[in-house]
Length: 148
Image (cartoon, rainbow, N blue to C red; front, side):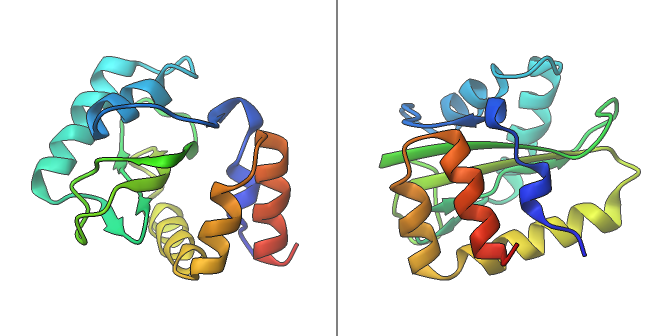
């Protein structure tokens, strides 16, 4: 079985994310790795123009399949205050999971997206994750939510 927590890395989790809007939030999350930030930002924002990935209930899951990404990468931003994300319910996003995948990983990419939404649809999980203070604790909590 595939677990999302296997793809969470401390260095890719930004606690206390501060940004005025989704583009700045995504840009900030991309600063934490060595990927080609400009081309990824362009792809993500192109995807956002089609339909916002701010699902509501404080959750946003911007995502894209990108050439040159070696493996699925998940970048996480946590904002207690919330970030304007053009969410379907009009509320700000407190948890942002930015998912990047190689174009060859369609099946795994879709599976991870679906599982992530399922985990986050429980309000208790969302509240607990938002109120955590360190990346390590975030990963540990996510593991316990997944039942690992």
